[in-house]
Figure (cartoon, rainbow, N blue to C red):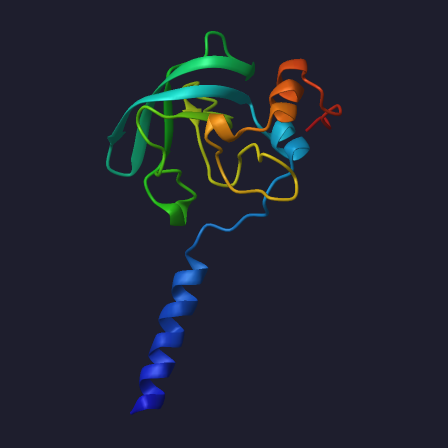
Length: 150
């Protein structure tokens, strides 16, 4: 009987792992190149829209963007298994990076695409107060290697 329970637990674990979001932690350079926008934002509100989460943000400082002006709505899947970013807190400042929906120009977040504080300790979207000053300067000066053309 115990073998059956272990076997069922193993199957559930394998199923859960296969449905999880998986990605390699980005370096600052790869994150800069893959991002269509990077901004120091303050989270104003958070709303669950069913399959997605909508953050309303104030852009305190924009470091990279392809659309002007940068929208103040940011969308992400509502599940970490779908690489959603659902843990951002209202009233907190973050360094966010993401893509833009080609059809709607909506800003999008993914847990696979963020600007790490450094390349040796990647850990998701940093609270702005914890962004190292050397990274802040690098972003302001756009001090990154040229990005490969996709």
